[in-house]
Image 1 (cartoon, rainbow, N blue to C red):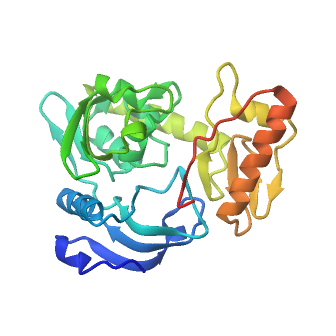
Image 2 (tube, rainbow, N blue to C red):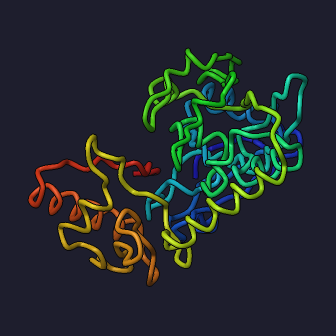
Length: 300
């Protein structure tokens, strides 16, 4: 256990847990323990934890909704800041939504429906947090975060606040500049448009049905595992290589959608990592295409 003197003293309401199982916070239901887990519930505590970890040279890992990550079976050393309780949302003038990074995309979509705001329907079924979605410029059904983000507030590694415009975020396919700077997203502003509530609801229902029809939502999974290779679809390449249903330990290439890997029987992170390597190798042998992981592995 790392030496942290009264970490509770620097917090204003966030809960601290020690040796906490991270499988409870992971969509794959895998992962070891967090040495220290801080359940961040306000922006000031996030800033304090960032400053504290920097000043004391303690490793800091940010965890949002745990939907697009694999957490090492050995757990994560240092401090894990869980942001899912930092989720306030507000409607500002000019149809701008401001929300904190821990808000889920479902909560964001529900807020848009309630206020008859359109352009974010594509995100309704993405099982992630706003922070994670911005970090990787998440997208689905022809839409991407870059199309609706006005600006993003982050903390630097030293805990200093910084603001990025949409252009400064350098959004591209599954990429933002934050992946290079390693800064921590705290708040996001979306430029929305007034729409017809019934039409928005209809679109969300249509996309959710498409998702449930095509994706293996009945099993724990980390979502789409690989980025889309230029000119190809990862799921099709995996299917063509005859890998649908391939199983390593408790992890399996979904029989419903080859782009997903599901936990069918108490899978470990190591099962997932070995399955990913085997799929990458066999797809390359079959098609010459190198699949690049979209899922982030924490605590290696």
